[in-house]
Length: 208
Image (tube, rainbow, N blue to C red; front, side):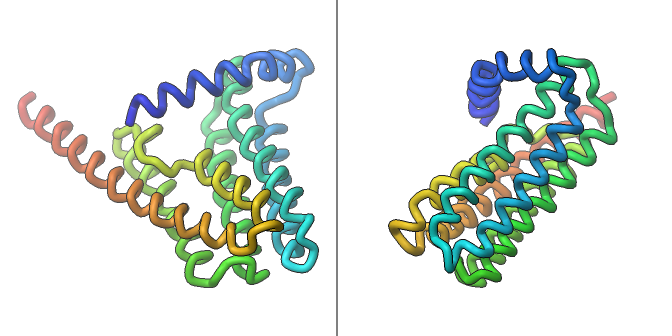
């Protein structure tokens, strides 16, 4: 799936180039974008919690989630542009992402917008998608772009379903079913891919 990673990087670079230049010129730091993305994710979760009784809030929740995802993508781009990449920044970025994403699934489930089964399944599978990548990369295998359902895809899917939910009830539940199934496929793909890479690494090491 390296082609997917290449296409996503080209699209992001094309769409964000001017924005990254602007943010860099006004001295916006990557950490500002990281925390802004996190706050928007929390805001989105709050809006989802109250959206069951006020359906118009689904639109604002979806928009807030999209903006959160955009800022999450831009913080890394700004860090690279300003040569401010750091281990602590990367740690905060990934950790706050998981907290914000978990809050959204918890809100959707506790507000009974989605069923407990698919709310918890989506939460668990999303975390496992991220875990397989972080664990594999800690052992020397890069999994960026490997699999169908990464964070960007999850955000887009949930946001689109949020815009549809006020008109077609149950859209978000269907979206989480799709998200869970594709996440399980992604997890399986990453496990198989990683094991093959590990075996290749071990074989090369044994031949030295």
